[in-house]
Length: 88
Image (cartoon, rainbow, N blue to C red; front, side):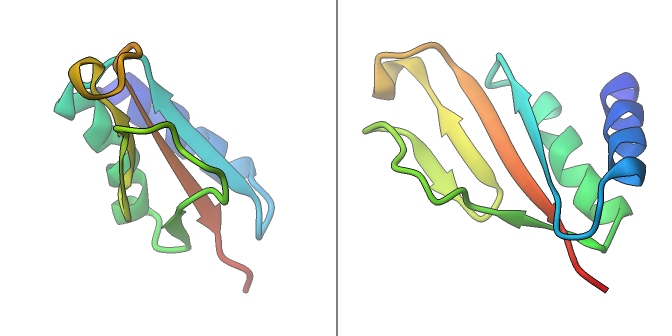
């Protein structure tokens, strides 16, 4: 998870104000999902945003991201979290 956090921190440093960073995993492992949430904790200039799209039926969508669990969606398991850098 340290590598994922380092990649997110580097990307965050290069993102323009108002820009969005999407963190996505091809697993539903909660340890990997926490790496995205950790970015917001380390960088208060970021906030989690829910993309203005229609998510497939069965996905769990919250203020922390979106999760696809195969038994509920019929799709592969994955997680995504969109974070936006606040304007000054």
